[in-house]
Image 1 (tube, one colour):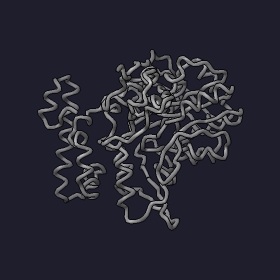
Image 2: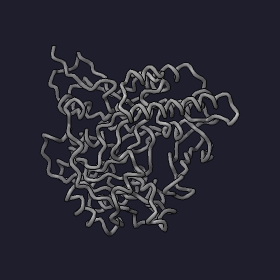
Image 3: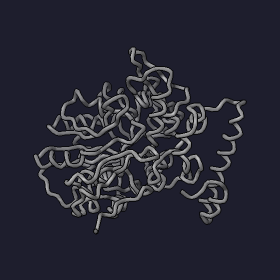
Image 4: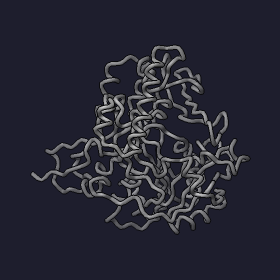
Length: 413
């Protein structure tokens, strides 16, 4: 039988557009053996419509990158309350508040449990806090594409936010469909999505019961364009807050080490200076021009299309934007247009599933959270890892054969 051919484990981004496109219930969302969100197909339920293939941005070769005519802006929300509760300058909060004020809906990632990140839709400003702030894990976007289409068919203004692959999944899902509403797409300068194992092990092993991950990255200590400290904040079952500023932990350190990402994140096809989304947003790292704005936070906004500039003009009442040099922004935000990462060849990534299944919490923190004391024997491993990374980078730079990477001990995943 001619069953659909979908993205492989190495290619799948976990966008879940295929699941939304399946009306027979053959496709469901699952977490794979490496702690990454993906699909499962029940061939007994498959009706061979191949709609999943048509919307998958990977196998359909959806063209998300485009030649750049993009404009770069420093940006900050004019509402100080919304800005304070945002991870950077509150650009997303300002855009979302504009859409809601015009009777629209905003679709984005929300923490719906202890640390259960899902895409939801809101249409009231009181719920905006649910979508604010960075979430250093993959959001389950299942259902968000069909919901967005339904809202658009009702003539609603919709702002859809997500990673580049999720926005690509939405645009690919809508490609052949007609709707009467207005769509605004906002993706992020994405650092890749880590394994869910990092969060699960943290929740299982911290010396208290975690009731809620309050913030993956709060600004309680202010924002800085350089040397920003990631301060995870949790709440226990007694209502006490736990601040991990300066404390190594699997969630934030595990994310920043980039050792557990999806393989598709190490070879991202959904970045680039020019994109099909209307906006790309992130932190304006490395800024020296707007120092007076740093304490409250500063956003980078990249407008990709002509109507993006018109939207920014319309949003001027809630969002301050100032044109900046694109090269300066890109130099300090390499993830804007760099999708390749040599960490995919490290043994810590190749044997991720085995290591998490067979190692103690303390060992996992040594490997994935860099929790290593100065005079610990693990310092030898830390130095060796750094040497391996530098050699891998040099090999990549010199365009040597992948067999040399493998022979050095990284392995080809």
